[in-house]
Amino acid sequence: MKERIEIGLMGLGVVGGGVENALREKAADIAKQVGAPLAVKRILVRDPSKKRTCQVQPHLLTTDPQHILSDPEIDIVVEVIGGESPAYDYIKESISRGKHVVTANKEVIAKHGFELLNLAAQHQVALLYEASAGGGIPLIGPLRHDLLANKISAIHAIINGTTNYILTKMALEDIDFTTALREAQELGYAEADPASDVEGIDAAYKLVILAALAFQTQVLLGDVYHEGISRLAARDFRYAKELGYTVKLLAIAKREDNTFQVRVHPTFIPDDLLLAKVNGVFNAVQIDGDLTGRILFYGQGAGAAPTSSAILADAIRVAQNINQGLSQIPQVRLGQTMTARPISEIETRYYLRMTVADRPGVLAQITRILGELLISISSVIQKGVDERAQSAEIVIMTHPAQERAMQQAISQMEKLDVVKEISNLVRVED
Ligand code: NAP
Ligand code: HSE
Image 1 (tube, rainbow, N blue to C red):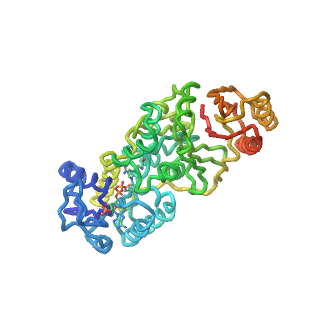
Image 2: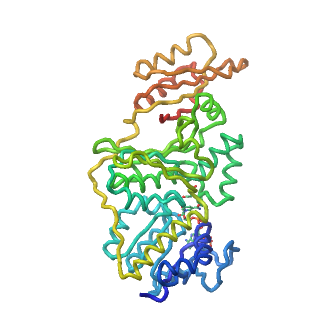
Image 3: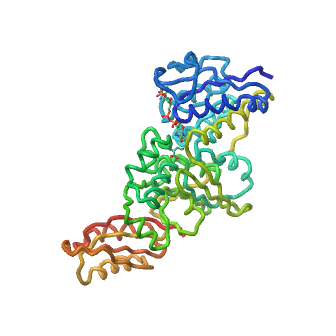
């Protein structure tokens, strides 16, 4: 039994500051659970002179990673620097030196998780990453333990707080994209480079992590098709509403026999679905298991306090193990028997918005292309005639069609001189 379990904290930004605050405020309760105090011994930062929102003793701060990596008294490294480099190297070195690691770094886990988990097993230490997906919502734990007996057929998830915040503001408050993004950044939800959120990359990292655990197979980042929210315009939200849909950036993983598909893109979902009511920074992950049926996890997907809840839970778990003399926490064994299906092979419904010349026979040319590619139309709306430009806006909703056929249809339509612009194509999940 150790008298004190020491943490080396790497990063003292939004999440690191939240961890430091929560550890201090809950020190007595945590010590009761662990059987010894859990204390931060050293904190790695870039700039020790920076003004911090949390109170830390200045002598704890360092810019030298070796003050954590080479300190034999440090049992657990909590990595909340973010990004691939140097975080990956620090995690690898920590594990190789026999330290347990807790991280919120979805990029490192999505790209190198398989290798790092094997390395951790080899060195008999824990590598835990609950905070890497879904902020404060327990997702990794349930997939690793509570749902293990299930054959999971699908995940439909809103797993990026920043984009959900932006989409909610654009849909419900008519706030423009730039203002909503700035607000999300001020609230600490966005990544250091918010393009990662906006382009669906952050959600793709998280989907890799969740799908690998759900399907118990290796999933590569390159398997995920991802598309961001930057093409969405205010009119797409208005049409969606008119048609009975809500627009969400959805991360979707589906199992089909021994193949799977993983994709992140803006999606029209029916207004009456629970997922459609998930607003602001809240995330929701819907999982279909053969034993459980459909279940839904819901909560705050970003922010200092919710994320520190996930990190501290992992750190407490590791500390309890240390004090009970248990070195490892079982990991899900990931096979390599399933293969990823490319986006071109999916079948879904589509919303297509385009600007066309406002003259007779235009619709016939468009429907001929769709018909020849076996894409059946479920409804057409014509709106917003611009008399001066002699153009009209057409919105087409299709029945389920093959993605490959839809992409062919778009490239053929783009060649029609009556089509001025294909403004947006959004997939629909009913
Ligand atoms: P952040 O606010 O940008 O904080 C990053 C911290 O790491 C800062 O303290 C920074 O030092 C330090 N740092 C960065 N590069 C460093 C380097 N090369 N050497 C030493 N220190 C370095 O980031 P964050 O929002 O807390 O996110 C941290 C991680 O948590 C990321 O992996 C992120 O994806 C993940 N995450 C974030 C949230 C969220 O809501 N923000 C939620 C879940 C997961 P200085 O302070 O001196 O600049
Ligand atoms: N930038 C991420 C988000 C942080 O907005 O969801 C939580 O992982």
